[in-house]
Length: 248
Image (cartoon, rainbow, N blue to C red):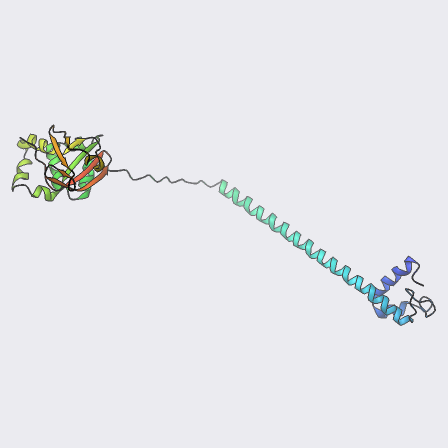
């Protein structure tokens, strides 16, 4: 014979939650006796109590564990929600501060190229040429829009001239001759080295032509190009090692 009434099972559960000592005090022989065994087993009262108590405790501990886990999960969710709300509040506060802060945008300009004259002066190896351009009144011309191609003699190239030649050319009374010599070093347009080597000659601003020989390096008349394609804002410079002298 087993348990036939629901209230008996509920009573056993309540008693089991209180422990073995509570069971012994509350259960009476009228409820449990050797003649009226629980769960249909012919066990004595103590065995019946111990067996049923073990079952009920197992169920209770399992339920308690589920409740603890559920509580922990709820706490974890609550903590996550609180952290999210706190973070959102911080972001909103930071947004308010940023909204009231002015931001300065700095634009970096690419450094502009210098013109032919300034490039020559800045190089430091065309001091004589710069002085000659000044004396001939050609500075403004070569600082103009252009474009110009200049075969620029170095200071060493001017030093090859007979002694006293430069000093004589720089005198005001020799300005026309100096202008002729200097403009003989200038070709209209932006003629790069790749284009120069394709030419046999080129007409200068002075009016006469210079011959071009690319058989062994590049030569303009008898001057060797020692450095080519110096880009400037208004043209290109090709450095030569000898001063070009036009025909008189």
